[in-house]
Length: 184
Image (cartoon, rainbow, N blue to C red; front, side, top):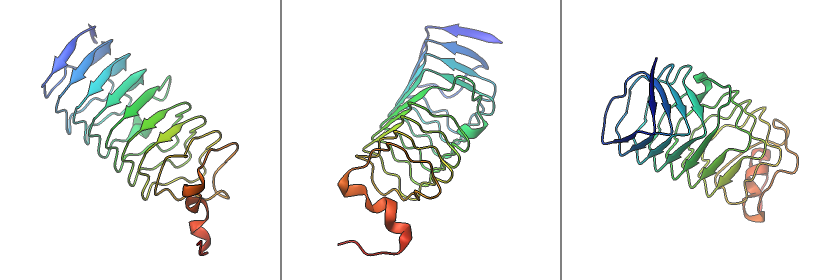
């Protein structure tokens, strides 16, 4: 497997299969590429299009995604060993994190519309100013998860594990909307 260390990539559309460490990808259009089996360690993706990229058994360790378009990614198929990612200002609509360990993961100002967090471990995760419209939380571990500035989420306390989970008074409606009650 090819190994690339401390490289800068800008405005490219394809990558060679391999392991990328301490690399920076800026303004790249990787839409619909195949990153299966690739390894990214201590890398950053800035203002990149990663929509519909295939990431089966891809490794992401200490990877930052900033201002990226990432529609329809299946993080549930990537290598889950050591998975560590941070998302800032990203569009993650229709992604799947099914059964993924995302402890301490930070989502800041992200659009997570229709994203699947079913059976996900989000212990200590932060959803800072995130849109969670139609996002799915079912049998998810949400202990110490921070939803205080998140909006449009709906989750059932009966179907998820909540303990010391953080909410604001303004977004508590997301916890009871499934009960068909009226709040005024």
